[in-house]
Image (tube, rainbow, N blue to C red):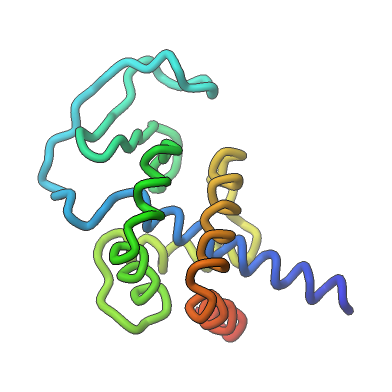
Length: 156
């Protein structure tokens, strides 16, 4: 039973991390009306099409694979995690305490898939970033972390 409980908690933490990672991908201030520009990338490890859509600010790269979660560079993730107000807005959305922007809505849409262990869209890089985000939330936002775990246990 201890293993089952541990697996359940780990899966819930994973769900929350995917959601938070998606939420941190784009700051709210970035207008969705901005037209993306096409650039070539030679630095990505995974084999991708030669043209990749890249938003001007922040540096978020969206590939053409079957996913609505963007790839997030480590620099962008660092900046997002250090923006306390932005993180708190997304946490309030995720816990149902505040309004949701498009990022928050993505969180709520993807949470059930991840909770069931059915996030086939998650890459190894995303999993590592998710673990990093969850560690950050657990350390810097312990009340919200606990609340999210309880909320995911009872269903989203």
